[in-house]
Image 1 (cartoon, rainbow, N blue to C red):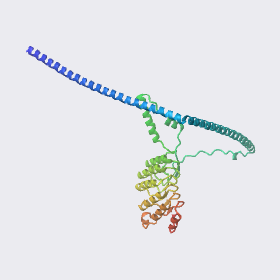
Image 2: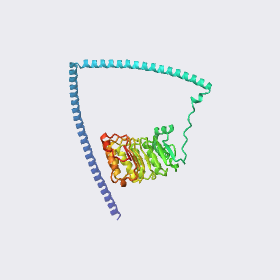
Image 3: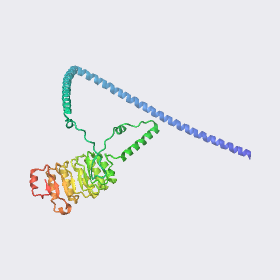
Length: 395
């Protein structure tokens, strides 16, 4: 039995050896085949490279030959003389410009010197007069004290002036400074710090006052807010600031279409449910801003009574669009609409006149009492056709 067991083990070892040798032979054959294929590819690349190199060398030789011929032809045709003449003209022009600049600098220096002498003489005379007035007790009327700094509004005020907070110098330096990348850990720490700083800035107020603390405000007047200021104003209003807001005055704030888009989104989110007066005069608004604004007012169910859109560039397209929206019933609660100085011409004026003269006026805009269309650019013929208008349309 032991002999048979030993024979069986020997036979299995022999089979394993034969199988391993077969696998090695297959692997060697495959490796040799790969090497032969790679060698073939290298040979093909080498032949292609030599062929392209020879072709480019031939093209370069042809190009050099052509350039030589062109230079010879240029020399024969007098190109060198023309080039020398051009260089001479350029040099003369530079010399003239240098002389003119020197004369100008001399004149400016003399003018500045004379102005400084005059300033010193006037300052001497002023100081002499001030000395005399001090002796006579009249100095209070010459150099009055600076006015007191503007006091911050109280939280119980009904009307506030909204200003954008000025950036401190250290904040501007932090914005300019970039975090140093010192390894993965340092980069991760800098990214975390940047995220925390950004989140802290978002939580801070964009204005000089914390708007969410003013609960009794009924009128907000913006001062140089711009579209970014309107965005932060809408954000604060959506979060519950100024729930009694009745009048929003954003005239002369240059908010543009982007600011109107922020306002429209805020109205859709019920940022000012009690708003009755909206002033957007002189804000660089175009015809495409009107549809955005009225869409937000209608979807947010804002019951405006006064809408002031004076001094914007609506033109004829804007006038026709306002007329169409009026006939759709977007002004059902409006009492006053101001469109003065909007560059509306004859087509837009006639469309507005017909819309506000519609037979369904009592249903579409029953509360409307005044439509201001003065200082637009309608032709005299159009104005004569509108002579029988009612007194609440002013053009």
